[in-house]
Length: 417
Image 1 (spheres, rainbow, N blue to C red):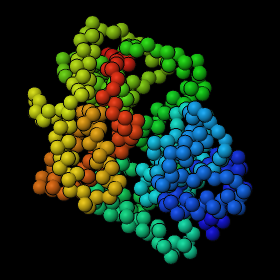
Image 2 (image 1 turned 45 degrees about the horizontal axis):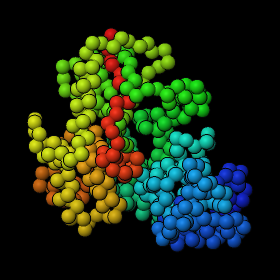
Image 3 (image 1 turned 180 degrees about the horizontal axis):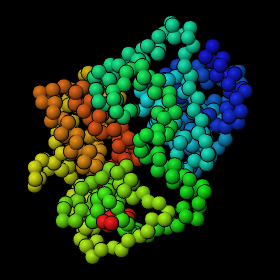
Image 4 (image 1 turned 135 degrees about the vertical axis):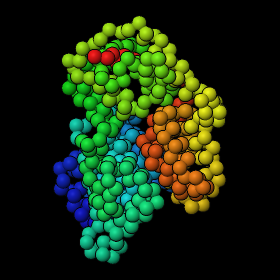
């Protein structure tokens, strides 16, 4: 019934009939099964990409589905893939994702949609189609119950990690399962919390509706600076730095050491209305800028931070030691969990995580006490305090600290009212 329903939808749904499609499934066998059935019943060529596919097939994927391909082609309209393509390859010549299988991990679903939901997509709308088992099938395989059981174990093991999906009170496994297919999880359009997607959408709106403003922003010179009134962080300077692909935000309060802000907090501080008036830059502007520069240099040193610094131990160095010890005892961990630890270690060694993130993580790790020897407990703390989004390819995959010069992108002085 499931394949018949898919073929029927592909044949009759207006969105599915005319657009390029990306169909995700969990296993190689299912991907090959879908390719065979779609080709035979719709007489349409289907490109299939799994873990066993080689470089030539990957090149075909890029040519036919990546909007930035150097030599674009239209040999294929339908791509069937396993999770192997849910990260690392842009597929935004398509605006349709079909989840033929529903993974129990919501991060996987977000990664799938993220392949087509890129900032430079030409589409105004992104479509996601989800398949659930029929009631008859579910009675046989108990997929929903199995997923709920997995999530329940996930909650029991990781505790507060549920905060990655929801704010406030802990939720039951049943409620969490229902959230997996929710629009908020799939698109990030949850109005109760701020995410990078809010600012991504803002950029798109300016690009599409105010192209002259978008062009003006693109041509802003480096080291641009301004000032505005703000009740929070008064008499402080916020500076946005970049080195290679590492991007950091430092706030220098008057007569205090600079502190690092994460992206969401920095964007919240910078966000202004169109009628916000600029204030005058004070005489202490350059002193505050020097303070932020020094903090950025210290945080992006090429070497792994020393375990001892003035004022106590460096949190990043301490976490690196704990991580290396944990990775010597990974028998209980899944491949995905080991990959998470490797990405976290790389990001820490390159100084790519906000200082406040590493401080909070170290504080939580210290609370483990003797349980620090349990890799599952350490993993739980890390995943609670260092979300997967900080470890994505654009943050850590290309050794960002080792290349590129340090640059001041812009600064904003926050004056008191």
